[in-house]
Each structure stands twice: as C-alpha cells, then as structure tokens.
Image (tube, rainbow, N blue to C red; front, top):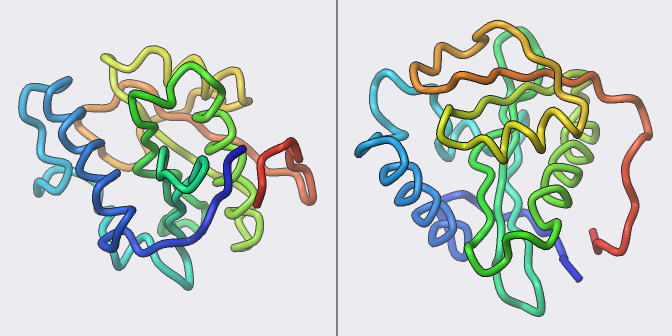
Length: 165
C-alpha cells in the first residue's frame, strides 16, 4: 500500500528520488541537465506552496516515487518530476502517483493540468494518454519533450483505491 506525503523537493527522501530521476534522464537523453538554462524551471520555489506541491510515495516506509505540481503563468497546473524507482515499476505505482498529483492539483484549485515527456519515454506517454491527457502544442518550451498533454480535472473526481492519502 502506498502512502503519499508532502515533502520539500530538496529535503530527504525527496532529494534522493529526484537525483535518481536526474541520473535516469541524463542517461536517456545524452547528459541532459534538467536545470539547464533551456529547460523549464522546476526547483524548490516552483514546487512549493502556494501554487505548487511535491509529494513522495512510501511503500512500507520506503520512498518509491515522487512527483510535483507547479503553477503555470496562465493559471493551469503542470505535473513535474514524476519518478518511480526501478524496484517499484510495473505494479501501478506510476498510475497511483499520477492520480495523487491530480488530486493535489484539484486541492490547489487547478481545473486544468499539463505535462510533457520525451521520445525515449514511450511508456510514460502511453500512461498519460490512457489517463485522459490529450495532445496539445508545446506549452512550456521544453526543447527535449515530444509529447505535451493536457487534462481537464473534474471537480471531486478522483480514483480512491487502496492507496492511502
């Protein structure tokens, strides 16, 4: 069973998960630096209240996933920094994380959320499309992403499964 909790992106256990995501992205995309000047900003300031949130998912006390929401200039929310550890993949953890981030986005008052992913992450794109994200134009000037998705969040709709909140 997953339990989600808020955590600052630069504090443990979030910092270790984010470093794992950075290492994986750098390996997938030939050394890409997510904090490079050409990349959309998603640091501690963007991923904190009042317009953002960062969550960590724990399974039996072990941090297995993380993700965030940040506010976009037009008032929509953007899902960022989604990552699931290698050991937790293939068990629905990413889908549960996405649902939790959507729930948190609703709590923050967002009616629309957006996200992106790159060409070397086809599983992520398939998951987003299955979750109802429709393809849109490049909304955040991410030079690496090839899929940009948007989803309208229905008030009060949320998958309430065996995932602890």
